[in-house]
Length: 317
Image 1: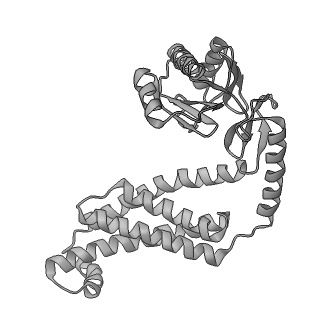
Image 2 (image 1 turned 90 degrees about the vertical axis):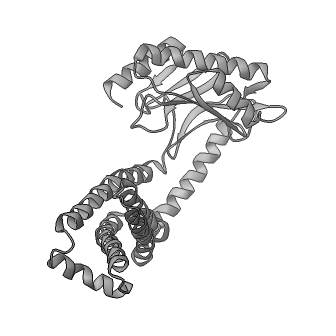
Image 3 (image 1 turned 120 degrees about the vertical axis):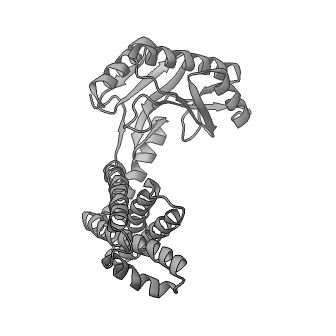
């Protein structure tokens, strides 16, 4: 979190009577009788914040249409989702610290007034009981739990961590998964190319599907898996570009597909296909592959680091 966002969060916490935990990058506490955790769902966009609450209602959660109506009536609110005991209100972004605080307080006070009027009360997110709770960070997510449920979640997490640590990276299965994912990327390159575009989407799809394919079948994305996936991305992006041009040759010269693939290098050498168009288009797709791969790799690595973590918010600063 940059200094500007940090100051905005500190101001919001002070004005709302809440507490800012800089180590977790979240605001927490109680206002208007309801417990809340305020955080940015994506650290790259710290001014798009979510107010998370654990609440229950005797008649069950209100329907989606009710919350859509609430969001329409209150301008700062993007949406509200209420599933089981979990309620989340997402606010639209504003990077002015003063407005950031005021818009949150306006929206939050309206929400808590609405909750109270409709019979909502604080509860534990896990068991749903109206008991004392505390805010927790659990495997990359935030939760409001009672001590008993927190102890059970912690125990289950320790068992899961032990199982995960024994889990090995299956290289062969990972390569198969990455190959299947890269084929989806090839299909995207070809289809979009036939529409006459070199789109960022094709490169991003190639990166995401290849990396996720390796992780899904390989068990986990290790450094070795990242290297294998990157090599496959580069090779299959080249293949996708070649196939796209082969289809063009097949359509224009009316040859069969396999012969058209063989013709592409010859037509390039004879300058019938412009080298600038061929290599320029390939280079652009490679740029998009890199742009797609970097955030995916970063998110996977961060996710692996936080997957086994659990701590009570406010206990580490």
